[in-house]
Amino acid sequence: MKIVAYCAQTWEIATTKTLDVVVGEKKLYTSPPLDYSNINMKEMEDCSILVFNLHGMPRNPMWFGSGPNGMTLAIRDDMFNGLDLSKAIVIAENCFGEDPDTPEEDSPMTTAIVKAGAKAIVGGTGLNYGGSYTSIGSDIIAKWTIWGLQKGWTVKWSLMVAKLRMLLDLSLAARDAKRFTIVGDANVKMIRM
Image (cartoon, rainbow, N blue to C red; front, side, top):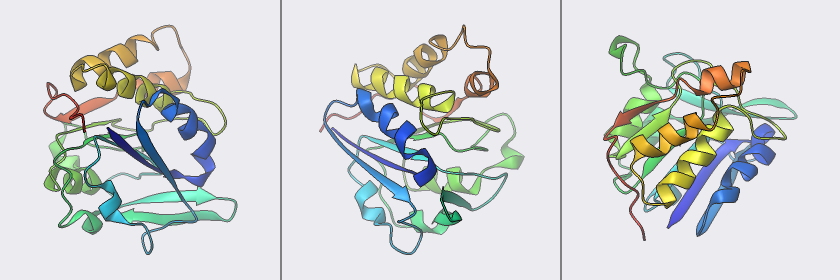
């Protein structure tokens, strides 16, 4: 199993904690120093789980990183053209992912990932709060979804268990994370490599 994560440098510590549950090969890239001009998109192929923890904006065809010097353009939707994500389940902690209930407000980034063949995408539909130094909200959803997928559970069951872990958390981050949804096949399982 191979897991690749691409996150804002600001969230590197929290994303590292999210990936603590990973059994197997894992790679974490941050923006900065990486950005749209130097990220190796081919690194995302042949992975079982692909995690994004970048800044998203409504109906925007790009996601952003952030660091001490401000925002960076991390990745654009056209960068998924020709990419084969057919083995991947994608977890997008970013704000403003796809909302299956409002297709007229499709996220160009989610659409690009679907066109690249991802089996399923787990993501939030609006603002999704995560931590910088500790795991909260979307970080917890990502962590426990990964944990469930590694157990051989479906995406649907893994996300449900992740949400159940947050039932007693009344923070805004938890409120937003509980709205995470699935685009694609909710009954798919991770491919073990």
